[in-house]
Figure 1 (cartoon, rainbow, N blue to C red):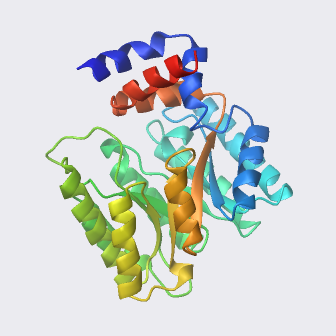
Figure 2 (figure 1 turned 180 degrees about the horizontal axis):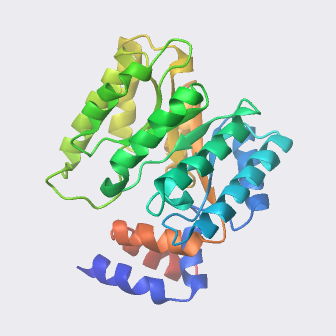
Length: 303
């Protein structure tokens, strides 16, 4: 109850208080901040995926502006020699306003990245978006087979069926590429697993299916038991290094991240940036009130 109360009132605090916590998990407000963090991670043998913050827009003018910002981010990243790709949230491009307009904007971004032989990951959002985002991915995967991937969430009860339903798009030349995460959105128990053990069990079932079927997977977790279990599955199926990587959020469990890199596995870090960091941070706080106590500690520890 305390965490929920704090999570409810923190959005009304001055931004400087929220930034004390948020700056550890967001690279900054500008693309220069994202480049600085990306170069530092690259120097440590870590790849990145860049995300311009700003989902759940209200107008297509915002979608147009977000598209231009992504096109610029792609250009600046390649100009700076960044070893990375890009993540997009379809609601940033009007998914909930006009599906066809969203398709055109995201297609423009993927086509631009493909010109550099780059890669775009379509993020999965909350359950009202799931079918639309799978449909969007299916359309774009057919046109850009090696340049687009999708995020899937292990806590959703439908996920393994969704993976199997997309298997017709898998090929040796251009494997399906999924980022497998647990899932952060608050969903009903009717459609999502809630217990830690249950979610982990289904995460590993999804992961094993993908590894067995030669689907490329980003193993996105900060949970050491899942990392250890993934090691065993990678060994069991003798998975080549070009068919998997580990993925983490910027600023989260850096020691575990370092240990994975030291074991010789490929690692990619999700690097968010942008002027809309405040709404991103407070939204994540509402979705995960347990973060509230960490914010309070950060504020008082740093004065």
